[in-house]
Length: 245
Image (tube, rainbow, N blue to C red; front, side, top):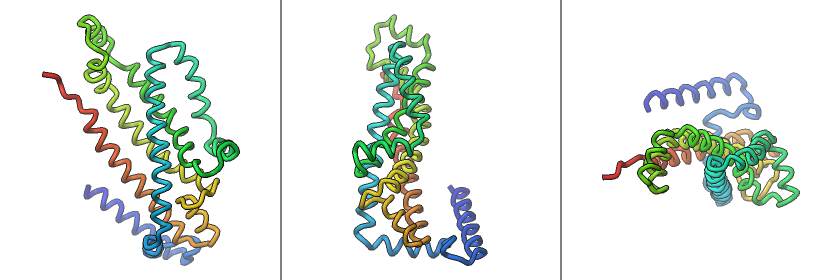
């Protein structure tokens, strides 16, 4: 913890030195200017409303996308034909640039729900691939033994599959949450729905307010780290294997 704090302090110091060297807050606002801009934002209702709107959309997209990824991966693990068929769709989603999805969804649904749909589409293949890998790596010997003793599916999931899937889930959550925030806010910047972080970023750019632009960026980073820590904490407890007595 101390090492991370020291690293953060060093990077802030480097940031400050660079801003002093540039001597142009329009090009590179310093840490103090950014904090002042954040303070001015924090006293406005629009700031909190934008954070709430963006956070809800992104987290809902993350939740639905992760659930779809887990369900479709389980189906692909169970049925070979589904794995072959659906794998093509997952490969397409994984390969198509985010901006293409944004432009298509702008035509289909408008801008309001972009930060829900884009994170969903970004997260889905991440959870699908990680869950599928975890299931494929399950101990076949343990599964055969469970079948011999007539173990119920719920018991198999709890005692065999979940311990195997834990590192894959943790990796998927860590990767997908960061991708969610980047893709969701990027979609808002393109689509410009009002009352969102993306709209705040774009208005800062239009007004050439670099300090406010950095302040919004800092908010995105802090929210992403916060929700990643919360997800890690919850998952590390939910996926703990407790042997039955």
